Length: 115
View 1: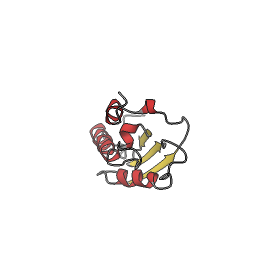
View 2 (view 1 turned 90 degrees about the vertical axis):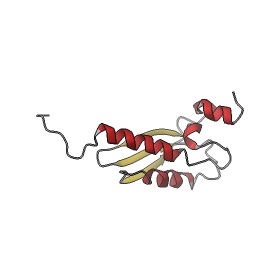
View 3 (view 1 turned 45 degrees about the vertical axis):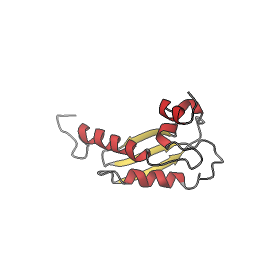
């Protein structure tokens, strides 16, 4: 690059704020069968924010046969779109690697009496 900066690149401070706000929004989405939010359960595998403020989210479910498998990605997408500065969001549901309780945060394990 010859000293030019992209006009679409998000400043680091804005990227950090969006990331923090996304985490806060993910924590408002719960698996109906488990009284812990999806972020603490470790269901969010990856979040990418591009220079145009589009968010790609890779997530899984506790089990492929989860009763809300058809609905939860939409809940997560809606939560991401509530973040100021996010222009669009898309959730990709994956099952590899499979989710295990080891992905849960200590807070989630404590909530479920697993510590």
